[in-house]
Image 1 (spheres, rainbow, N blue to C red):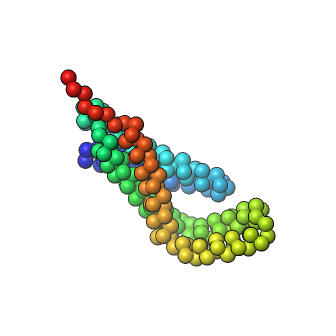
Image 2: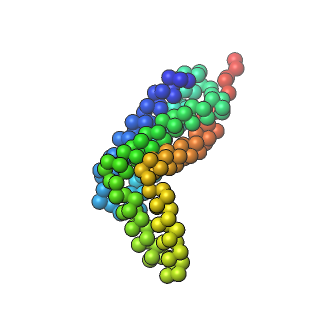
Image 3: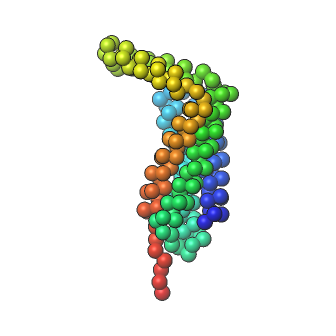
Length: 172
């Protein structure tokens, strides 16, 4: 089990980092909305190793069976690798590559809100968003939020994969 976690965890970690920078490079001139979709795609690509790791363990290392609990542990641990990579890479991005990202995203969000909200609601939401950005604009906090986001998605994928891939040992 440890070897499977290490192997697929490392795959998830490096895939997270590579896909993050690939999406960053390919999507740098795209709208923030499209970049957000590409970001979620990169998360799901990285977390595909959760399913693959559980399946590999069941089929190659555990004679075709895996309990729900063991599958869940494998999936959650692989998710931690992916989440850690995203947290590190996002913090690096916010510190070294685009420290102006929070301000750029704030301006983008405000322009979208201005188009969709009535004037009085816009002013209320604008104040809330500006205050939130002051609280959460720290790059380390951004990395933590990314870590938590990826791990939560990974937890759901781990749970679903564990349900799908669990299999009791065959008795002869």
